[in-house]
Image (tube, rainbow, N blue to C red; front, top):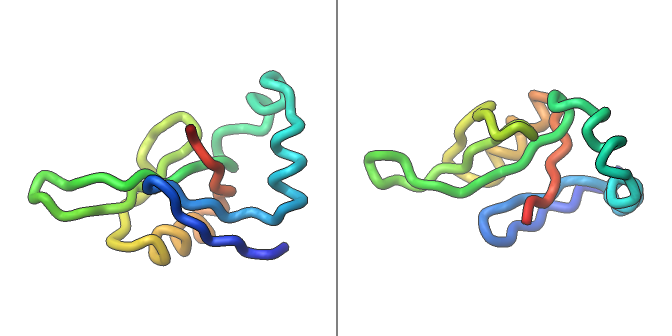
Length: 88
């Protein structure tokens, strides 16, 4: 699997082109059946002290971890075995 690390609007994508294409073909019912534990996304935000942080979020929006930079957030996603998806 190739590792494409792109960021746009605070969201990072890490998946092979084949995996991304397969995920885009899923019906809403099939997507729900994949399970929340395997899918996630990154969101750029600010902490109360004003510093920027990257939040690693599960598919249901619950926070998994916080990181200071994209690379650390990507490493955390790998550690938690999450596939990161684009959220629009």
